[in-house]
Every structure is written in C-alpha cells, then in structure tokens.
Length: 513
Image 1 (cartoon, rainbow, N blue to C red):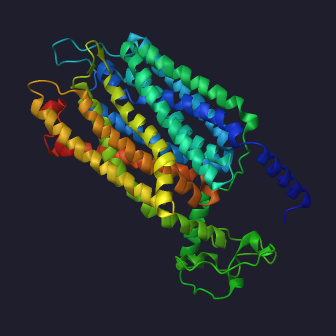
Image 2: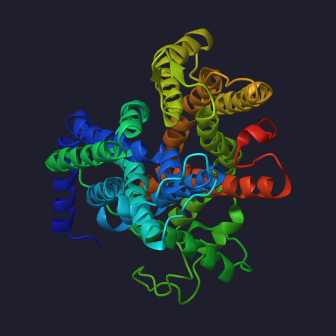
Image 3: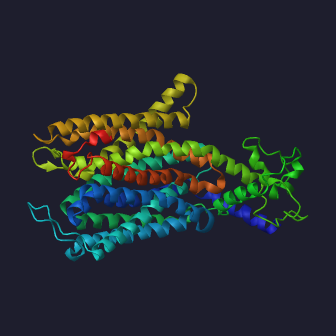
C-alpha cells in the first residue's frame, strides 16, 4: 500500500506536470523534429544516387540497399519505444539518439570529403568500375547506421512526446496533425534544398545535414524544463509474455462467475468495486484466476508468471483487436516502398529539365509526395472533415479515412504502371519528361495524408497507457517489415523474370507496378 508521503509526492509531480507541456513545450519539440527530419531525409532520400555515383553500386543493388536501410530505420522505433516507456523516458532517449544521428551525418560528410574513403570513379565509356574496398564500405555503413539510429528512434518517440504534452484527445489529435505536417514540410525542404546542394557538392550537402541535426538537437535540449515528466511504466512486453504464459498454465481451469475468483492487483483495495472481466476473448480470463499458491493473504504475488491482473489481460485483448488492422498496413506499404525506390531510378533516365538550364536532382522527385501530403493534411482537417460533419452530422471515423487512403494508394499504382508503359515505348527515341511522374507521387501523398495521421492517432488512443510510445512505433514497425518484404519481392522478380535489369530501359517495370 502506498504511504501518504508517496501519495503526496505523486500529487505534487502531477500538479507540476499540468503546469508544463501543452503549447509552451510544443515549439522546442517541433524544432527537434525539423532538425532531425531535414537531416535524416536529406541523406536518406538521395542515398541511391550517392551509392551509384560515388560508390559505383549497380542501380538495382542500390535500391536494395536503400530498402534495407529504410527497413532498419522503420524497425528501430519499437526498440526506442520500449526503452522510452519503461526505462529512460522520452526526453533522455531522444536527446541521445538525435546526437548519434548528428555523429552519423558527420561521418557521411567525411566520406564525401576524402577521396580515399570512396572508390575511383568509373572510366567514361567503360562498363568496368572499381568496387569499394571493405574499409570504404565499413566507414560508409557506420555513418549510415548511426544516422539511421537517430532518424528511426527519434522521429516516432518525438511524436509520442508531442502527444504527451496534452491531456485532451482532441488536442492530442491536433498535435499529431501538426507533427505530421511538420514532418512532411521538413521532408520537402530536405528533398529540394539539401538534395540540390548534394547535386553540386556531396560534402556541402551532407554538411548541411549535420548542421541541421545539431541545431535541432540543441534547441530540443534547451526546452528540457518546459516538458512534462514521463510516467515510466513496467516493460509492457513483459506483461504480454506473462499473460500468455499464465493462460497456458491455467488453460484447463474453468472460468468462474464470481468476481472474487479473479485477481485485480491494487484495484482490489480501491474504493471502486471490481467488475467481472469482459467476455471478449474470454478464454484469456483464465490467466487472472486465483489459484492456491499464486498470491499471499495480503495480496502480493508469489508466482508472477502464473497469474496476471484483469487489467493486464484487458490490455492484451486491446492489442489482439488492433493486430488485424495493423497487419493490413503491410499490403499498403509494400507497393509504396517499391515505388519510392524505383521512381528515383525512373527519374535518373528521364528528362529532368525545368527551363533551358535548370535540371532538378533525381532524388528531389520525392518532394512531390511531401508537398502533396502536407497540403492534403491541411485540406482534410480544415475543409473536408468540417464539410463532411455539416453534411452528415457526424465526423468520419479513423477507419473510414484509412480506407480512403488505401484507395488513393491503389490509384497511384495504376497510374505508375500507365506512365512507365508510356516511358518504355518512347525510351529508345527520346527521354520522357520527369513531370509525368508527378501524378502518381501526388496520389501517394494524398493517400498518406488520409491513412498515416489517422493510424498514429488511433493507435495512441486505443493502445493501453503502458504502450504509448510503442503505439506510435506500431506504424513504422510494419513499414519496416514492408521495406524488407519489398526487398525480397524485388529479388524474387529479378531472379525469375527479366523485368528488372540494371538498365530499366530494357526491363518491364510497368509489370512490376
């Protein structure tokens, strides 16, 4: 039982927390987001071009490396979320990983600055190129790994930290919208200004990434005393494992109709009378049944892996209900992952002139997605949803908006196939203008504006409170699986068909779409 002193301290911390956070803390966190995203996507979205031009990597192999790195970036948030939720808190984790990101971009700047860290350029007119040495690849991958750790862990925990500054679901949803808008706006800056500078000088381009990363980190750290303190929770995955093991050990027991036979933990001594466990997935309720030797007369647990509280089981049920929706994102993200990498290869062999003199970098083609998403988010939140509410009398549900996002993604694949088919027909006579790639990128951005913010908000609000950071990491986790799946699909297509040669003008990328 908690002492009065402990209770008083908790109340004092709670009151102190209420005075902090909200929109006072928001600018500091958003500056951290801006620095991290401009830096992270500045090197990531032009990685394919850097590998091809500076490390003599073949085009399809470069896309494979890009997908593996993207998958790594997307899988990292789940690890960062566990550490932030259960051990160190959001602020400490973000401070550390964003500084690691700065060090990674610094290493990339060094690789671009010294010729000894890169292979010699290919001889003009020759297909024979020098491969990078083991040392050169080691330094490159060390920089990529450190930069990826910061981008992967930092961007999602920052989203959680933004929402943690607010109490009301409406404010949390609004903060997510502003977070997503900031992410895509910063991505637009990185895929235009940073990528353009990299086209002039890789050293200066990566140097700008390092500068943006350090500046964002510094401003974020300066806001330390404005942030709300994190309420660290026990490792939620340990609770999940306990529920599964406790159920297995008691799977043969019969469910009881008496509330006294179920274990409620500290809730049993509270003022509110415990209620019967919910009937959904009722078989799991066996994990909460009291059995001789599980608990002591004073209510403490003797065998923690043999019994769970009702709340722990109910939290596990929430996760089970969300898994089907979460898993469908894989089918959405695999084609997007493949499209994002292949569209850069398409842009490399297309006419990228804007006017008589200016040629935009191939990596900058992805800015269309960022701009489309940013504009669409504003239109959806400021125009579409209010109009829908006025016409129907109710607000569209997150699931409905996610479904609309799926439709736009399907349309983008159809348009991609049509455009690539047209490009292939003209490739031997002339290069098709790269602006033909814009419609499919616009559709991808519109789709992301519908489904990505809604999934973040839905998971944050539906997941148990012990899984707040993990909830926002659920989306990038499945995106990580999607990038690795897309790598496997690309390898499979390349091995068994002639659709993906190193020169895509001799392939059938339209069939892949």
